Length: 432
Image (cartoon, rainbow, N blue to C red; front, side):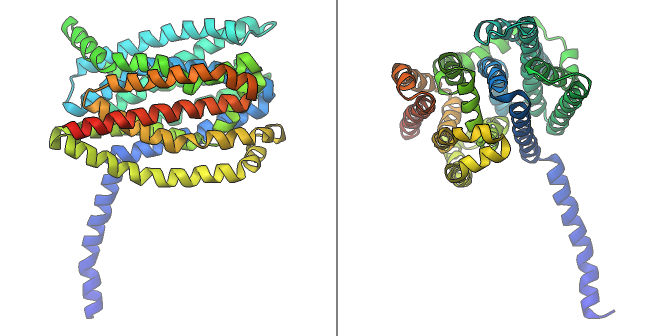
């Protein structure tokens, strides 16, 4: 055997071991599966929005956007009390199956209540005519239940150490939605109600396997009391924060639709579609970062927590700014390509909305710090102040500048809340 062959023979077991180690790391890493899940969610969210925009037209897409905005608003509200505290608490110490069973049951009840609320909201705000006056509220309720149930099921899977199950559930959800929509398109037609129903049913069916295991465990009364107390302490100020921060995103869409028409809601959503992958990427941080933040706080105190958050923020902020710059430059071409010629006129709105992601990313990391150190009152104070200022400016902005005013209102709210939250975080870090 030549010396080269001998070296190669000795190196093969080492390379195989390294390859096995890398494969095992990728298979077991929650970060990898969270990234994969959000990449899938980002792509399918973009595809769904594009399909809805092209199949429904501007006005129909506007009706879909208004329903979706209401669902996302209520889902964000319930997250602060149901899944959000769970993610933080599992970072501090391991939780029992009874605790996760309590969370799963609470998520199911909350989903039902949100479904009823969304049905009433869609009947009042969207106001469809003809058979849609009944079909749309019912479809909106199904969509809302599926949206909330599946979102909580995924978070439960991550919290219980089953990130792969969450990813495959997301795959199943989108596959079922696509099959249902294709069947409806071939057999009959696709309108807003059909689109919402397909999305809701697919999400409910895909969530069931994730919920069966925690739902099998019947929590004792003391577990319910403890979970309720801890979740209330963690989320009470954040619930109020959502109530006062709705003007920044979903309420802006609702105002655009109610004051300027469904075309305006469609235009605002069309602008947000271009930034969809970035927004979903930032949402993916909710699966991992709060838990890792709790682990760093427990291991090294607030110094380790601050170092972790700053390092991760710098790593993510730069590529987000690059992508936003692409939207500023090529917004009209991207809208024309993805959504059709009718949507290219909303490119100036996309340029304004693209100012948001770099700002809100910094705000999200400040919120993670305040939540991990249980200083959530600062979050509420920041959003309350920004909400008051934004609401005062909303009417003159919308009546004077139309849809441009709505987009400006969104960015104004983000900017004010970010400055205040970072200020509270900096003061808390210096006082430690």
